Length: 211
Ligand code: SAH
Image (cartoon, rainbow, N blue to C red; front, side, top):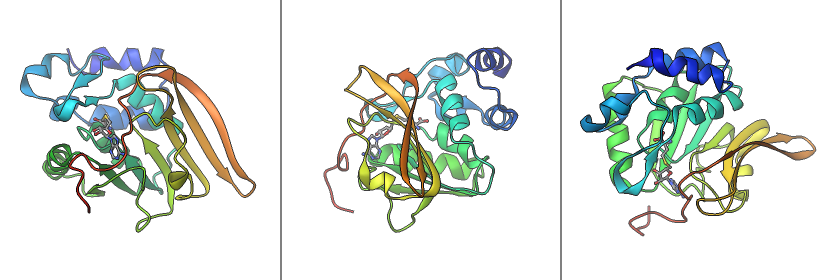
């Protein structure tokens, strides 16, 4: 089982943007999994990774990436590096990706993977997504890959005018909606995209330490 089995599922789910499909085809999902999981790499399932977290479902990765409407010129912030799979795909579609993760293990492992795969336009940081990355902002796009219990205002403030944020928002493990938020001169416009289930966006670093 490989990309050929995933591709028709992505199309059927509405991932139709040729550039997104091309980027997904170019990133081997097994590179972000443990060897015993390789057999499941091309099934449309979220799978466990270290620190009690999950690598997202390929269809959700495809739909979120497509919803960002990237042209290749953007400066993008990702909250929740996790395995690094979503980041690797984004890196093929934007100018530079900044990715934050609150677990040191995940941050370190993903950073090494980006080096191995020679994805040189990704900058990673052990940090808290609730704070964002003001030193690098503002961002043309922000993608959050953990579910927030409310729209984080610190993040919307780090969006450029004309910018787009894609974020799952809702209660822990239930009733979450993928939202797309546009920032215009007039303010913010929120659109509901589809229901999802994500691990929670937790406040602070996992170690509790300062950074
Ligand atoms: N994009 C990842 C998805 C990982 S799951 C992938 O493709 O594999 C979501 C990740 O968000 C987890 O690794 C979790 O530790 C991280 N996370 C949760 N809350 C966070 C926060 N406040 N700041 C940074 N990362 C956070």
